[in-house]
Image (cartoon, rainbow, N blue to C red; front, side, top):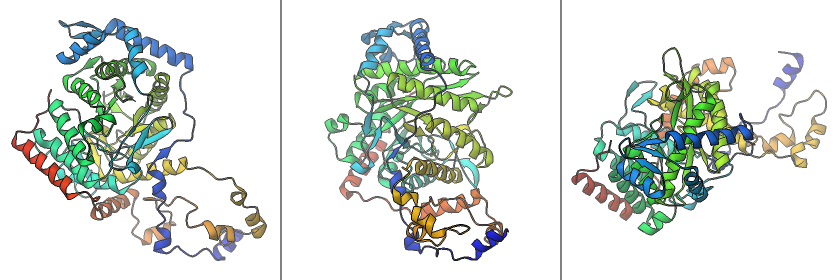
Length: 516
């Protein structure tokens, strides 16, 4: 240690905050986030316009294969050209322009209470956990099929952290039969959290069941429920250029009910999309526009989020790759296209790593930078994603929350008042001194800096003496503590009884098998 460093080490440092002092809740600032930075761009404005024009040509000349006969009928009634023999739907650019004229430029998804509402517009940012992996993983039990207990545990983690704003599919509870799974998962969302629920579009029967449960939980009439969005779903096209039956039904049902469809083509450059970033985005843009048109035909003004999930594949194996430079550039480009047509934009936090290791961290960090510096409004898979979406990881959830909170803190304003400039502190300390004990520091040190959830900033000796735990091991302890300390939000017992009765009745009736 240098002589000056030795002097600083010996001088008095501020006392460690007491437990009550250290519990200042900075996370309340994370409940509603606004990104103050200008989005980064990968294309010029002219190039963005060219991609949009190319997508219109795809819709006019190639069209989309639509497997749902009711959806084709709606397209035909709305002005599209439909070939029933091939199930191909072609779109005049005037029809697309008409749909873009009615789709909202932004909206608010309403929570159970107003302080849980989330704006989807402008510079607002909303985070949701990972959704849909069939497997679950943790440090002690390894990788295994997801269960209902795992599903509820991830919900408890969502409730524990303010930086998670809406819910997701968490992990597939494979111990619950698929025809009643939606009833159990939605009931759990509504009982264990007070955050905005997410539901899958797996057919009209399941969609309507989910709407009814949410309406009951919120205490709304049917008209009130349909007047504002209260839930959301993801619509994935079958790239290239196909819309299947459950996704078409999802667009129709959610639009008719005034709920949010996040229309997201899943395009992997070199596999289900052209190998170039611009070509992959052209295809994805065309598919997103096709879904948007259907929603606006069903209900002009239906809320839509422009979804993007464009990455590349490993050209040696064909496996998906995430958090790559191409993923980042695709994110920037997708954000530009969303803003070109004036819609909120969805992106993702993704990694191809099979375990919560350094690869998972740096690929996720690249994904986060691409999404957030690209200006995304909604991020699905923000916490817990692993193995290209095949696994939800408890530890990765916590590591992701750390990264999300660090971004949320980065979004907070930086003061530059006379007090922030600290001229008196600089004069007080003088040459060769330190600021540990000066009045300016003593007044502010408890809340001056972000306090990490996972990171360990102790020196090597202290870290070793405490057990030399890695970040993944620390995350393991944190998620267990968070699950154990979960307290469900209060709810009117009568509402719970009504939802329980509805679930039991629908289960007795056979539930609602998903369509295919």
